[in-house]
Amino acid sequence: MLLGSIGIGVITCIIAITAGRWLDRMAVLDQTALFVVFQTVSLGGIATALLWWFTWVQTPWQQLLVIIAALAAWRVSYFPIMVFAGWIATLVEQLLLPYKTLPIVIYPTYLLCMGVMNYIAAMAAGAIVTLEWTYLLPVTVPAFTIATMISFIAPIDFKLLPDTEVRFNEPLPSPALPQSNAYLAALTAGEYSLRSRLLLFAGGSVYKLIPHSPWSATVKGTLEELTRKQPRGSATLRVREHYFAYHCAHPLIGSRRHGT
Image 1 (cartoon, rainbow, N blue to C red):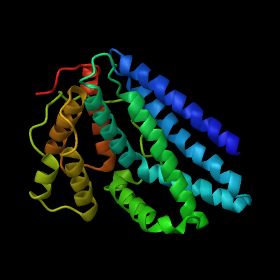
Image 2: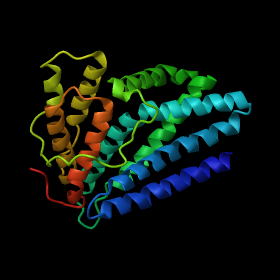
Image 3: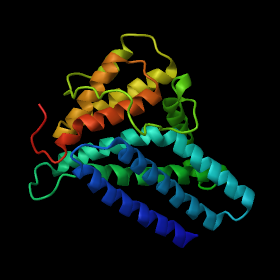
Image 4: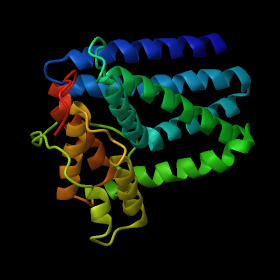
């Protein structure tokens, strides 16, 4: 099982890098391809962790418990990991921007981060249900609690799968550049549930950390504008809006002209 875990992990990394370069080079980003790659890499990270756990957890009921915990971790962590992976991709873009001999990559970074973070989430979930590494509980339990709150904002979010955006049935928004922090502004302008407030606060906190490089600035600005139009959105809507922003920013992958 340990060799299987290593093998799946290596395959997932190879898929992340090769599919990421393929996505980067698309003239027009294909939503179905993006969706399929996201699911493949995120579940690849989960499978890598599961096979590792099966090396140490032998009884069928324990293995079933670990499977349930890992899939639950995938469900509640999918959107937060999507946001985190996107942020890491913005940092790498900013890092590569001055080096004209190096290609600027977005989706290889994004997908590698997505796979690794899902692996970590599944490992943490397995540790909770098997009572291994109990010293991590003060970190893992609050982290999963926050992820769950962010992932279930409105009734539409209470569904089995975290992402069903295989294709769009509505036109893309216009690309936009960042103006101001719409998330924190929305927090002070209305009454929200605790879960909505947490989502807006998280968005506002990440907003400050996104660099002003070409792809990053367009993703940041487009999400800002969509949030300004609909600050009370569900997690389902926010996932769709992230896809919208990726499509709007796609022509800027590889550009070395700073956003303005």
